Every structure is written in C-alpha cells, then in structure tokens.
Length: 228
Image (spheres, rainbow, N blue to C red):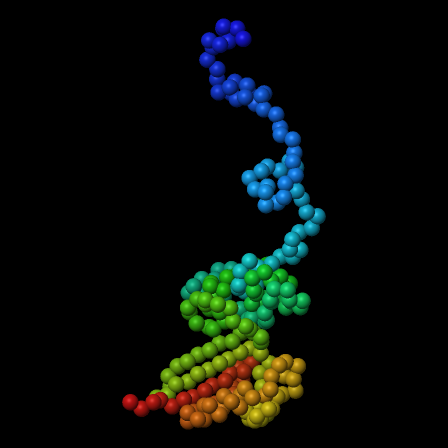
C-alpha cells in the first residue's frame, strides 16, 4: 500500500466495501429446530398448502356480512338474527344470509356467506341490552330477547325468540309433563321445561302466558309484588 493511500482519509462507503471484500458466506449446516433460533436460513422454506386450509376466526364472536353492519353505531346498532353456532371442527356450517349472523368460536371455520367476525365484546351477546357482552352464549333458534319490567305492582319477565313458535291450539298442551310437539322430537329434550316453569311460577302466585311473537314465541311471566 503506498504512502499516498495510507495518508488519505477514506469515506464510509470505502471502508464498508473493503470490509465486505473480506467476508465470505459460511458453509450451510443442519440444526434441530430448537437449536436454530437466531440463525439465518440458507434458502426459503415453503409449504405446498395453506394451514389451516380455510378462513377461520381468531376470536369468539359473530360471523356476519359486513354490508349488514355498515353505518352501525353504539346509539344505532345493527340488529341481526343469530341462526346458529359454529364450533371449531364443526362439519355442518349454517349459511349466513342478509340480516343474519352465526355465533362463532375461536378457531372455527367462517361459514358460507360471512366475510367478517365481530368480537363478542362489541355486541350485547344476543340479550337485547345496551351493555357489552363478556362471554359467548349458545344460540339454537335465532335471536332471543329478554325483558324485565314493573307492571301493576308486580314484575313481568318476557323471553322472546324468532323460532318456529307454538301453534295457538298447542299452547296449553305444552305445559303438560313429558309433552313434546312432533317437530321438536329431533332435538334433545324430555318435555319438562315449560311444565317446571309453570309449577315454579304458580308456587309464587304468578302466571305464565304464551304469546305469538310473529315470528317465534313470547313467554310472559307475571309475578306479584312483595309486601313491605
């Protein structure tokens, strides 16, 4: 190296070029996966298929169509009918149509028709209340609304759904023990639900009434007020 070169001030890029000329790639080695942390891959690693092979949910919530929630706010929320549940590994998926949603669990496949998932914390959990939900609840026949209010010195509890409802001719019969309507025989049950409800309500001097919810059924329970 000449004296003129050693006496000259090098630029940063010249120093970098000089260093890189001395560097040589290391020979590749094979390591177990746990021992390879911090190392650099010699070549890209690719997989032939996507994993999972379907769009899935990363949270508990409701599978929806985004077009159905456009413009929704806390003051004016979008109200959707819950048509069913989607669990992780489920074989049969409900198709989500206009104005509908499906309760979906973490890791479950997005059902047909849905293109987004609303976190359950951003909803009322299907209760019809104004407070956000903290956990998922199972929905088997669509939207269910629960109301409790005072009337004529007593309390009124109403539970309404948008299912198949009960024909007016059968609304007294379904209170009998072990009675199940023909269209309910394909689902689990023993025909004791409404009979137990009426027995408990009558024990507290109350009444139970079944009303057409158009569509669905509304169960109205009236309980007298307690004297001071």
